[in-house]
Image (cartoon, rainbow, N blue to C red; front, top):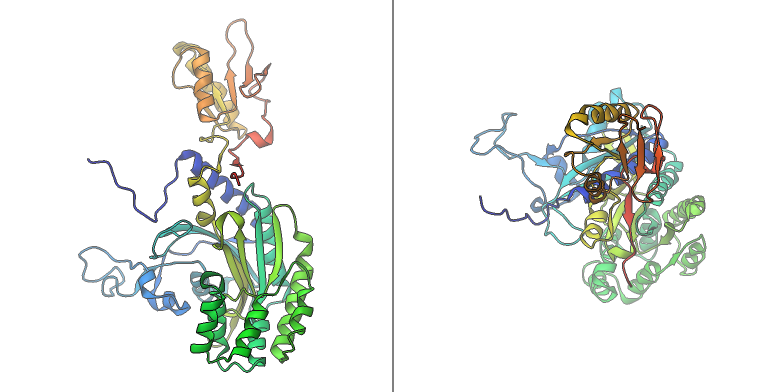
Length: 451
């Protein structure tokens, strides 16, 4: 068999990088559950009409079908109406409708799964990727406090990770829609979609599009760009908006909601996390109705690493409506570029915390007995593969990042454990010894890139 060629857009990690990814996922999961969010997992395939209702183009959806089959397992023409999900929001909407009778609302859910999207691969954009979502979904109504709560949970989750600092940009769709209506825009949705591309195409291109396609005159365009230029880490942005001299009921409502969201989240700021009201954030998808979020890392340029917002009609069955608010975190989008550049990894490439040495092949059963005792108390342990000189066994552990080597008792000796990082070696009892908590499992390592 010839050497395989990597598939572009389908990242695969080596063991050390995979250990870092798992550590990140474990940390996210622990934070989400600490705040009372329950885990769900939805199927990978959804009907195409559901996948496409979010406005995605059909070219980005992967079809699901069996090779050389006239019909799929559901009796439908092969591949005609099933596709792999490209995010976790559309599956959530279907899940809520399908299981509403058995769910308790408000539903506090987190979901960590693979997604697939058929777009051109590049750094930070992949065809297969892992996403981590949190959402709070209500039944007919949902408190505005939920907007603040998902912000707090994601801020805490990101702050716990030894990764580059994150800035969460926040805006409000009512605010910008009311502003555009207040200046006389006849199609505010078109203005929102255009402003949403501001960081990608620049103000000159946005100006041309607003004039040619949204029908705005130069004065209206100037006000739109002035609004988009407003940014502040505190509620002072409100005065800047009012100074533009535009009035509309929806603008006032959105401004009040955004001020409250920013005030409520100011205590979340840390060295690793900051929140900024940025009125250029629009989120072009039409179903957002209130607060919108977009998170960025300085290491990723203008690429969003998390996004979301408030949607007052996530799903409806005609009798009940299910409003929600949530944030999606692109785990692969964050990690893959940092891993590729060698700035993120793990302190060891294997789960093992302890390597039990083997003095001779005749002593292997004793080494296994020690390993069993350590594992029984939740200490990840492996036994040395060969009964070679202890120096070679220590080097074997060191190459894999295993921090401790255990030397089992033999005739006339006691059990001893060696921290091979410091060189300290002490007597130990396999039925009672425990390593420090931070050594139990692999940890994420991060080093800042040179500027």
